[in-house]
Amino acid sequence: MVFRIAGGLDVDVNRVVHFGMAEIELSVGTIEYHDTGGDGPVIVLLHGLLMDSSLWADVVAELSTDFRCLAPTLPMGAHRDAMHDDADLSLPRMAGLVAEFLDRLDLHDVTLVGNDTGGALVQLLACDDSPRIGRIVLASCEAFDNFPARVTGTTLAQTGKLPPVLFGLFMQQMRLRPVRRLPIAFGWLTKRGDATTARWMKPVLQQREIRRDAVRMLRAIAGQPNLLVDTARDLPRFERPALVVWASEDRVMPLEHGRRLSELLPDARLVEIADSYTLLPLDQPARLAGVIREFVLESAADVPAPAVGSPDRTS
Image 1: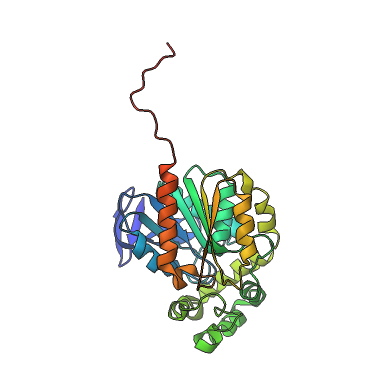
Image 2: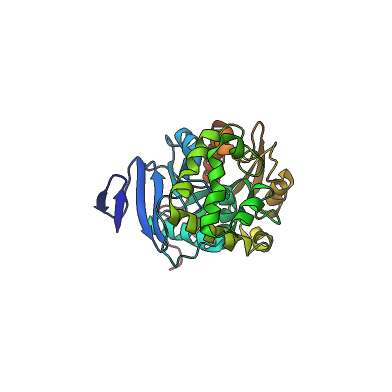
């Protein structure tokens, strides 16, 4: 397997362990991801629409001393490498792409974390009963009938109906901070993360191929409005540990949805975090990292250790 480390170095190995950015060729195209390396328990963190892996930078900084953290940049509008012309960029296919990522890197007992639309991906994967997933974390995310999410998600879905050229012209407004801070943009998603959201806009503003991918993705999402309603029916089948973390001031993802998710999942707990909007990794990274750390260590400790050296008494 060939990985291309950022900077142009190709390394042919089964697994690359290093600090920083790597790239991997998957079925839809080249995916960038951050990998802290190490031998600790594995945490994979998923972002939402028009975001990249930097959403998780401060959370990963808190967790990387004890965990191997991987944060892929999925083709959701802030990626830098265009996908194949025939790539399916629907949300179910995006979930399949995450499953492919876990398989190709041969990751086991993964704690899968999702925020915003990343949490929708986690729900889809939880219902697929992947043996690689040991536990899940849903952090202020789309669920039930809030898909695309109110205000921001529905606005994006509407703009996705435009041809890529007109979509690009519309998105040019996002260069301006007052526009980014509107409720229809990132204003209700984060209190403190405007500098990060400005960086997320660069690929879609500067690259025609990324605009093409973004429009394809948004149209696919708009075409499946009942996707998470249907997915919720299968969530009770996920019996592994689950943590639901919600911003108590969230104005885009209803707090009631967090409570409903925690009730649907058989082995779930709910934690509310104050002084944050939807993007908890930007507004309260230390607090979010703390509850993830506690959850992973406690749930891993609850798994019975396999018997070692027990005599075979069947003969």
